[in-house]
Figure 1 (tube, rainbow, N blue to C red):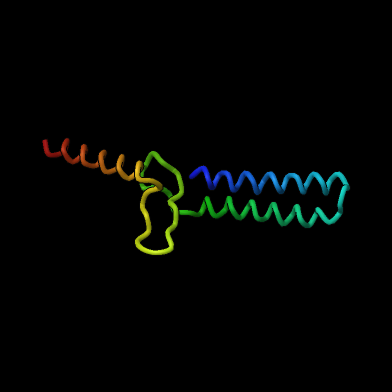
Figure 2 (cartoon, rainbow, N blue to C red; figure 1 turned 60 degrees about the vertical axis):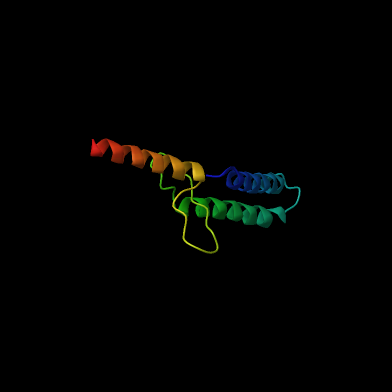
Length: 97
């Protein structure tokens, strides 16, 4: 998973935690609904990350970023794509021998 997505999930969870502690401490009863909303948002981010297609490199489990146009990507990064292609070319060379 890309670090920016982890950062978004972490920020959402920290925000939910702060609202929850405020609600539990009785500082503001309105924070209960806010805490619930923030937890729901954090869970949505996690769910989206888990449902995203996974990288085509067998050793990688990162989600593949979605593009608004064009063909869907098969790999999470250029590095994973290049490593997979290199491994496939090496295997093809070995099979020809």
